[in-house]
Length: 371
Image (cartoon, rainbow, N blue to C red; front, top):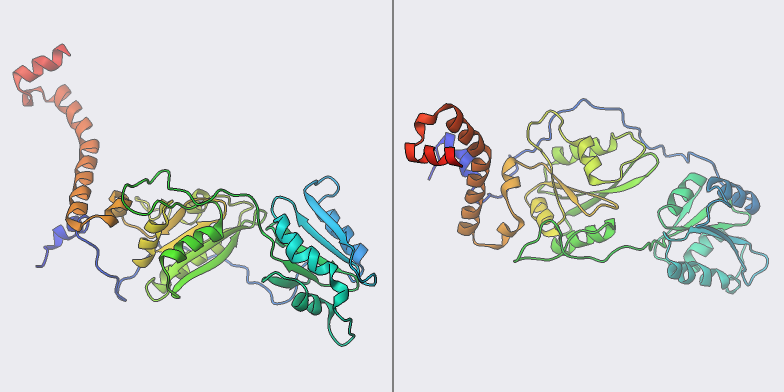
């Protein structure tokens, strides 16, 4: 049955949504393009020296040692006295068990690796010694400093102008718990937490598809906050993904610490109604993603931003996904009626009682006067 044109918008609040087609396009509004700095392929920054003592001094100066008490720079006593190695990490951000297992123990067994002149010692230590699954080679001090403040461990070797970055992240955080502001009776009881990788893992556990894309974008010149843009390839509109990516990369500020700050920076300012919604429920974010929206996760924040959304999304409850559609439609209709009553009834009551007394029955008017 074809719905008349004037009633289509009202019916859209109650009827179940249809699948997205290729003809559907999303828009967050047009904005003038900003200059985005493109990363250079060359190594920019302060290069490491081949002298180990110089490198240690440079790293100590960068972290304001000895004033910073949580920064650890330690020379490892290897079994081979001809090899000097220094490790550096930040207590509280790096997991001490990972540092011991993945870095210290392998380096102390350095003498078991035969020293050869035809092989790079950095590559030899990286491939044959370090037990971590994520080991990278960095050439500049700035890259290593950024890795340390993210929880990784830096390994410096005498005679080498490169450093090894070993993944040892492990700061304290709360475990996955139930949602606080969006509690429901029926449905999953999980909520986002402050750890970015745990949040993306929750989404992947619900959407077990290789088409789920998780892009990392760094914002904030000083905070270097990690953000994850999550969408479904083949469902989300490419123009929407490019626009969200462009707006995040165009942010030029010292600090972005929460999803609320990020929302204010990338939302459409001239829109009367919000174009983004925040949720702390992974299942609700997953439903939006499967409908073609884009979710934005911020490290250190237990909420996800979803864009774009219409006004009807604010009248939906997460529990609507877990009840039969007739009940869900009735509940949404009750919410719309309650919204209209809350907006219109106070003004109507004041207008009638103060300026249109003739509209009130005499008995009721006398009762109101005596109140």
